[in-house]
Image 1 (tube, one colour):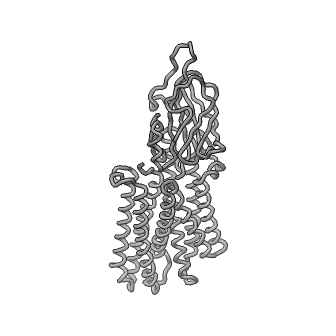
Image 2 (tube, one colour):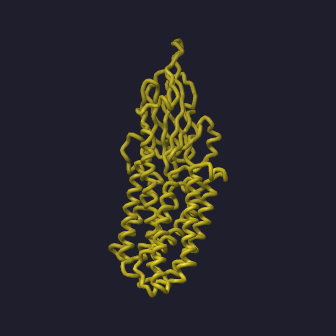
Image 3 (cartoon, helix red, strand yellow):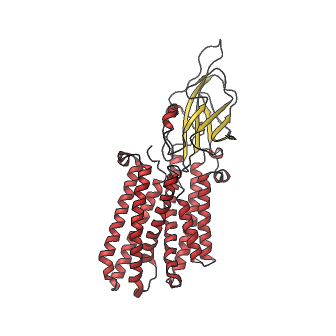
Length: 424
């Protein structure tokens, strides 16, 4: 078995050790194959049959078979009796050593790829020599259907940045609407206009992320296939989230009903719990934890944004700050607890926190959270007692704007984290 690469959404392992690979639950992995890894066949096989650890989508899958002479991308179809199995019919293969390169979509929405080799022996009586392949890194041709190394990295990088920006605007929208609905008809001037801007940005960024994700998961050399993407669980979740926030935009811009928009925005936040690693790692626990984590972040970011930019009446500024501070304190506790619980599910041990890219990004998020807690403590102890002065209100607004900028930076780290595989 040639090593199964795992970078920016690719898994590492050896399908020659199928029993050990079955212990990994982070992504789809190859459980068995026909022909088998390292098998020497006396005749050309009629098909390639790959069985994975979880259902995979044939429309977003690719199988390429190549030898020292040439390469061939074969048509992939799903096994009608087993959603975990992919089948590709083969033409007659001449005696040679062959490598099978496969690429599928995992449950967490990340593409997973790997490869293995088999040999078709020469007929009886013929010279027992067949063309062989050298090391895969030196002899894998671009014609094998793989993108250049920079291609997947660019797609994943764009998707990660868009994901971070989109989630920031989505949770800010939900949190902003929480403040508006809590005040009823007493929302300050311009609050609806800000909500409309956040809804428009959320719709545009989530739509752009969906497009970038589709580019990222589509096998190299193909045009993105929206129909195939909507046939997958991750694709349907992405589309549902875009649809919900678009309806929230309608509820704000046309219906002028903040409570309807809040319901739709919160639904989009909850749906986001089923995206990324939580969809593939202990989903029974990690999806609810992530949804609760995001709801708490929405309350926190929305409150900070409210103090930072809302046109609040100076006479009522203190009451608004006290309300937001109390809500933020509860939200911080929930964010911290759910974040620790998710990290415990995704990281196998303490060394993995420091010894993996995923763990180091988690540490960066923790550092950002610590900075935000420090902002909150400063605001609560030093600035809120001075809110009866106009200078105190200006200082709190300035502090919350800096806090909001740090929240955006942490959201971008979270966007990258979603595209970095946890260690198995």
